[in-house]
Image 1: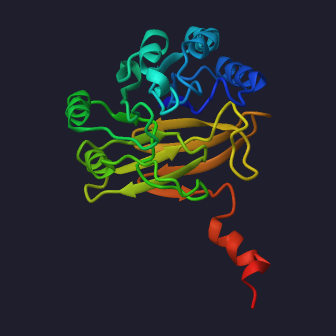
Image 2 (image 1 turned 90 degrees about the vertical axis):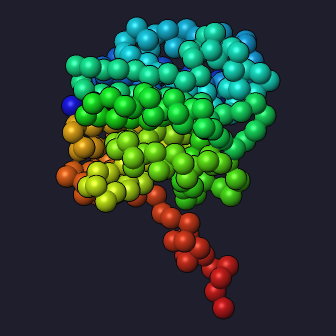
Length: 273
């Protein structure tokens, strides 16, 4: 079994809360996961001063656990991809946990001054070469959404070539796809004809007040074992865990953490006649 912590959308430089990153580092130190994965927007404006000021937090996480990160659209603002690669790491990378029979591959979906994402043929080819390995647990990470999620607003910021990536996850039997971007924790599971399943997991904003509605800043704790998956949303403020999803033998039970938009609409007196 591999245990992972999934953080995202830290937004150092705008509504960032130092107490929350301290909570998360303490949680990582206590739980000692096999890896910490960050799906982007580490800083808010792509400025070198923001990356440098966040670096001490990153160094502390790396002292505890393996770490992999992908750039978000805010990281690459103002040509920030230069400083991301100098201070955080390469825009695309892989992490092999051979003793856990696990591969984690991160790709860059962000482009300077563009809200929406794109992977492109060159990265798609590179992805195929990384996952052409006989490992049990196969995980992919990117910043932007592949599938729109509820309660995340109507702005068009998904991956423009999402269809190709969704097909890729089926062909290469990817267990788990990690994303951030819209600050809403959520999950979908797609079961394919070959009996495999892919779960698409989104994280909330882990260390900022840029939440939606009455959500709390949060991150995900993940257990993955030969296709079986458990995901907990962890409240960054008090570190309380809430079960989000349980997938066993390709049967998924999704625990909704909040009301859906349609439930709010149906309960509103605005629509009464």
